[in-house]
Amino acid sequence: MDLSRRQLLGAGLCAGFIATTAQSSTLIEPAVRSLAAAPVPARPHIVVDPAIEPDLLARARRSFDRHRGALRHTDLVGIADFSRPSREARFFLLETNTGRVSKHLVAHGRGSDPDHSGFLERFSNAVGSEASSAGGYVTGDYYPGKYGRSLRLRGLDGTNSNAEARAIVVHSAWYAEAEQVALHGKLGRSEGCFALGYDSLQEVLQRLGPGRFLYADKVA
Image (cartoon, rainbow, N blue to C red; front, side):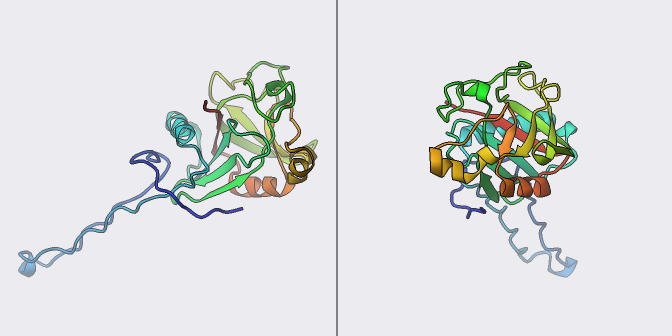
């Protein structure tokens, strides 16, 4: 569901994500150079929905800047805020040139939530942990998986370097549908993958696609 842009983030917080360009001054003929030039329009303020926690957004921006060379496209990024419980929409698609955001439910790994509380308690990069991993990812190719069409991921940090070995991907799952929240107050758990509801996955596959940035983390 697309959200209206409501609050202006602090100065510079979205720099590196948000691409804005100041417009050039009007050219003036030599005969009238003494006249005041038309004022240069101010740089537009970019508003990002406050659903994205500013500290997490700042971390994502720094990771994005570090890994920009691994990306083919920078127009849109995915951000998973695992500070939030699984009953809340916490997977965000952020347009970097407008600040427009859409948000989705996403499941975390059972190894990150062994008591199935609905909260991610810890991350792990270990093979066999069935936990979610923090850090920056680059999206890979589409492929037909157990849950249908899915999106491969490659971890870019030491905290998620085993993503390919662990087959950590973006896929749909019945346990990530909104009905699970209505029934149980939380989503089910994955084996570390970013599991989304079917409709959400279709948007992610269409808009995020291969060669873009995905960031996952939590803040205290």
